[in-house]
Image 1 (tube, protein in one colour):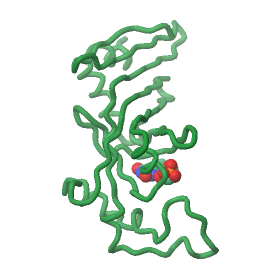
Image 2: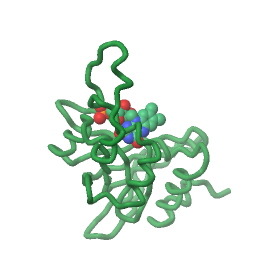
Image 3: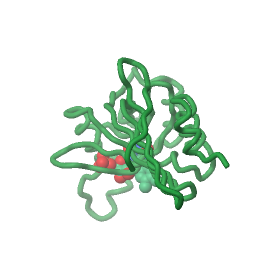
Image 4: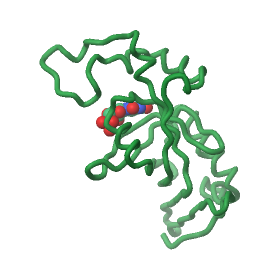
Length: 185
Ligand SMILES: Cc1cc2nc3c(=O)[nH]c(=O)nc-3n(C[C@H](O)[C@H](O)[C@H](O)COP(=O)(O)O)c2cc1C
């Protein structure tokens, strides 16, 4: 029987289609992913993937958050997700472009502003609070605080765990073309 891994290695387009299906399907493993950046050391957090387009994966964030300034200083990032059902680990390596203010496409601005409160905290994400301060917000500032992170991958690494033998495959961007190759697991 064909497994998801077989589809993922059959072509880069098919690979991305699997990721998109796992992002949009209810409970799919590629909706909430782990985003890794570099600050004083490695840093890591869960984010929601809002869109997968041919060249980039879109994440919404607050421009006052530590990850934003980390990415301003060092645009390299990695993402990670694991699917318990198919025992697939997906890792992506790339760089991030940050988009703010008027440069944010209207469709993303509209989507983000449906949860305006997520970007309207009076205090920056991670800032120390006194009791009760957490709820202070300025809803009018939400759109100014919103930022898009466009993750642009140049390498994907997929590992499938299986009783008949583990398999690992890489998709590597070489001179604008995605080239696939098997790897030792
Ligand atoms: C399920 C889940 C989804 C999340 N999605 C996002 C997201 O899409 N964007 C975001 O900035 N933070 C998101 N967060 C919060 C981050 O994990 C993190 O706590 C916050 O962004 C601050 O990160 P930083 O200090 O590394 O900048 C999410 C957290 C959880 C648990």
